[in-house]
Length: 259
Image (tube, rainbow, N blue to C red; front, side):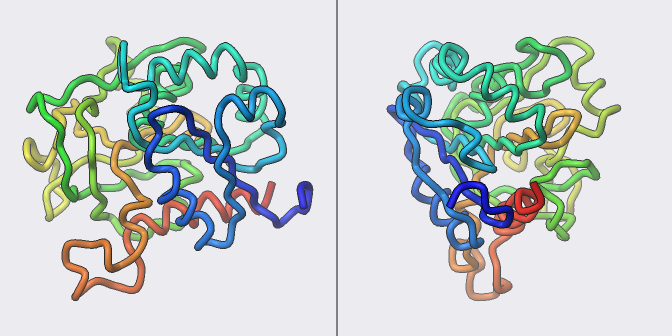
């Protein structure tokens, strides 16, 4: 089946400690894609990344989040897949990271991706505790391929993390602002940027999701796969047909169909 133009095969990359892969799998399957759960060892030893059109790193606690959240997963990718992964990105294929996956992409230096080195981290929440609840996300105007079908200015998507505070080297956030790389910001229910509890981790600028300058590498701390169906919303009895996270999955699948 590989090589058929409109067939979108998705690599959901996991390792020890990943625990959101099945939710991501189901979301992509329900959008008409063909997801595959692939362990990092399996991909690096026996498979070719270019068998897929999308790479997703899901959430969880890879390697127990020892050292730093996502750091060991990133180190193992660097050691086994780095050259292939950077070629995959350079050729326009989309790469997404959700929660722990976002942390991995930052640890790899692929986000914010302005230079070929690590420029940021996801630090411990200001509350110094695990934050797990729905949050409002205000969407910014960007060229991110993961948000092309997102029509709502405000989305309701849950977070579940202890280390989600986006911190970057001096001048990097300003460069990201200029490049329109900030995709989502935490806000209150009216769309106004606000502090805790609306911003669950204390990220400067209320940063919740970012993309690289080209727009095909994307990471966000909230979990769109957990806001995929309307019955997953806290106001599910009054909810619309689809959850707010569905448009994010649909966006990247539609983009990949054209590759």
